[in-house]
Length: 69
Image (cartoon, rainbow, N blue to C red; front, side):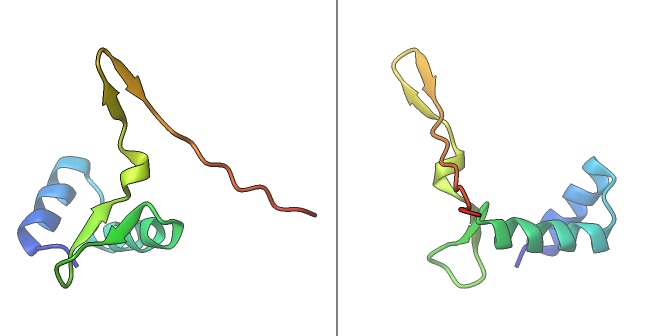
């Protein structure tokens, strides 16, 4: 998942407990915010969430899924 060094850094800087950090990562993976990388155990932020720079502008694409009920 994430290295011990990175987990310690995140918990110390954000004040999130290790248990909650694990819950956040699980939820982010379930929602598709984090996706598997090419290396085993690597997780990356989904590219759709990273703004694209076009000259002097920032482009953000948003895809909304609508449930038909």
